[in-house]
Image (cartoon, rainbow, N blue to C red):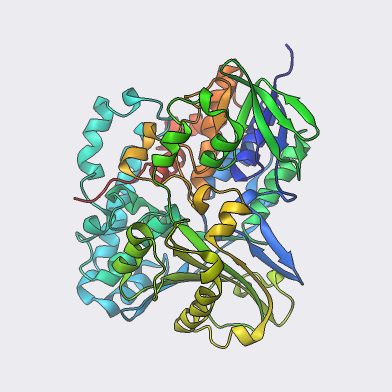
Length: 534
């Protein structure tokens, strides 16, 4: 049989994971990346001995990635050493108080009791209910959603009472916690997907459960070490990776994708996998006349996630602060409305700081620290001109940092880089600078999100945060598994078989027959899109 050829547009985590899975199945794979570096938003910034993750810094639920590496004949622990963080992070409240969140149940209960004594017993009840929720939903959430038939069926309808689609996460958490601050500690995770906890459906209570049940991890060298390892494994499998090579258009015969064109010529393929930002890729690479459901006119009407204002700071000295700190604005609801509804910049924004050198000294020269600062902000909007606001907002963020115990930072800076939503838009080709892609709203969830097997065209498959299951590294890796499986199925090929598992099973299917599987459940739950609260 003639070897099948696949071209992957983009060397982000989804594209690289797809390359590994397809190559392990015997497909000839070529990855074409616009930037001169690997990883997309999961790449790194390196300068003067400092190293920063460009985008994701939280690494959750490594099992998805473990199974991808196993399918390639290797294992995650040898490719990417990781440490489990304790505390997972500090969450501090502008309204007063903080929690050093930990999977130590007694320790967590003591901290919750310090904020609200009556809330402490709710922690174990929350864990127990969400553990059961995760297990019960597993059978329904392991397949792609390609139409109404995948949504409206007897099994899904039976699960509706448990899913509580009429409730937001915040409303759901009132069953366990009365204190507003405690509830925020268990629902701020909705921001991982660019969502408000006051609009995010109760299903997403699974997000914080995952952290306590399975841990928050730091890959040594940062999350960019994960994509570097995927690229290394892909190359061992024979994948060709072309960097600094923008794709100029995707080629079609009729409605079937047949390859791509770059400045150095035409790259023919039996199928094309798109790992670029979905909306931007459609507008730039695919003729509007070929798209029906996802035409430019319809893309313009879609909802897009928030963006982020980023500061990467190499500074003198060290900080006796946790690895991760999340600061919640005193008026968090108003801060979210500024981002999602009013599209203006808050004067008291919430923010996040990674002080990774406390866990990984390799990220900065001796005696110095690499600080990563992120503030969620509106995506590109006429209300905010970043050419005017960049300097002012930078100064505001230095004042905000003092609230988290990071004092006298500006004077100690030895390296600095700032990325605004305008930079995400123009430099990184992210539509409207919306760093979490299409918003996870009721009308953009499940089968209403762009399909893994792209519904508008033949021979085209999607991976990444713009398709099912959604944003976040675990689910992006799961999107690669779903899309790769569909592509191989369409080529009449089998997915790669993993090596013997540490638990003694031959593969995940055999293991699932003996015990409830969690992997695809988690990925699908993370990517099941939000529903507004009642």
